[in-house]
Length: 300
Image 1 (spheres, one colour):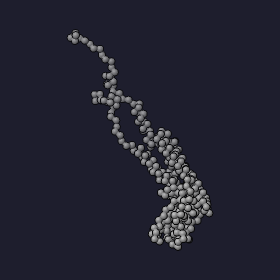
Image 2 (cartoon, rainbow, N blue to C red):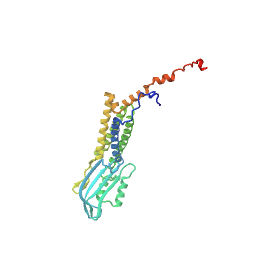
Image 3 (spheres, rainbow, N blue to C red):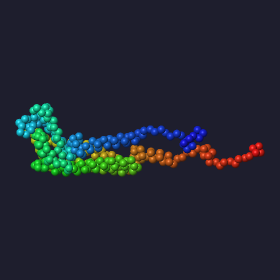
Image 4 (cartoon, rainbow, N blue to C red):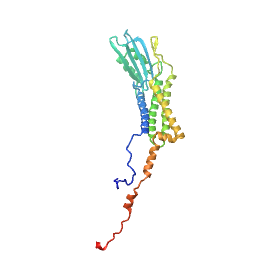
């Protein structure tokens, strides 16, 4: 739009330059924090070592090293139960003993697309240390402990619940960008509910008999690991966030809209669409009808 006598025809002043909106930045930081938390949990869904510790336990013991050998080593033996299998670690104290480096971390999968017994048989063929094979044998289908089926089914439902929770969390992020913020709060509540349900599904393994894992006079006991407590913390956080959004929707909806920077944007858009400033001097000179030309005798 060009100037007319130094005045903008339709705007009383120049537009404001763009500045960062603090409210928007705060909202983005909150959801990035939740996103990073879910990214920490997702690898545990696949049963990786990083967060494959829904149950875990350690013990230090003197134990035989390999079959058909009289060698005895002092080592730390760890058991980490994930949703897709178990990780068994063996680290010597010190690491170099009996002319070998004792530092093992073996994974045995029990997901529906894996064969746990086959993985155990491969470990026997590779000649893995006896402590690893002894612990892995406790979770086979032929073991008298009879915990394989319980762990497999419980882990399957826990994994499925976490994937559903992740999907509902994505939907909640999309709903929070709409004018109806309460639906985003409901989806956050669903996210927390599915995460708690995954914990309950995995906890059913506690109903089975405890299978003793003995190394001489020392026993390896397992308890809930970091992934379990992290999932519980995020689930409770989702409940708090969801209840807060729903409560504000019914108690102070204007405060909720202001926090999400929705009310101010709508007001500004409404003002920009409805208010029009007209330069009357420009309009009068443009729209006034032309005056008839008067001729004088001197002009002829």
